Image (cartoon, rainbow over all chains, first blue to last red; front, side):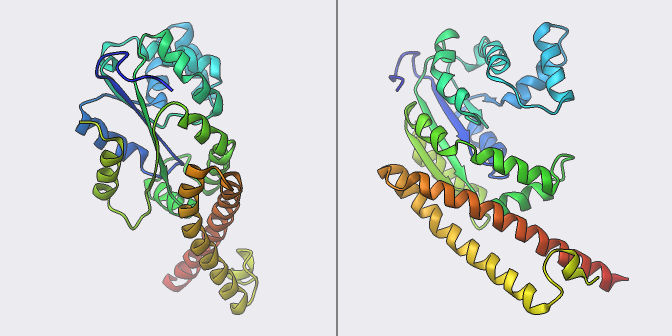
Length: 197
Length: 81
């Protein structure tokens, strides 16, 4: 577990969970409340693909192939993003911890970029059909029934291992993000759980 | 072929009711398992079993719900015509 105080008062809050659980919405709210930037690897790769560099070309290919990043490309992209000053006092890592290598390598990546800070992890839990309902309303091109089911299957792959590995990084909380709860209620619970003043 | 049959729900209103009942049972069990998830994550006991059951039920419940939604959509479109 990373010890507190290694990089001043910085904090990293990882928001993880299945698709449709409200990570993007809660990530925005949380980042606003904490005054932290919100980092998502999807945005990082989207920004990189516009650049005429080796990393940019690899990122572009990722989108063209509709592929998931491997740990090597992930590492390069993450380190690239962590060089910026805006994350030095903490950040909300929205949609992080999607695969086991990412979780196990996280401490090392923070060390390499001189961003070692205390980590808190929030797992937003939503039932499959409720998440699917939200995604279908969103209406993105890849939000087909087949696509949603494939992503749900991916989410469950090694989920137990990932959750237990994530708990080694710092306090880990499960928050129910059911459709019968308001965004405000969920946000309030997250703030209470992470207890960052 | 009847709508219900095309959606894999059987050409029989009783069959559809059975699927709807199954979806309800799955949803109820999932709600209970979500509490178990939090408890077993803290204790470690049965945690893997709870995740495995949630995985199964989440996918099955979602697939069945998709089929019911599709059937309702087909029915609705039929009425509109």
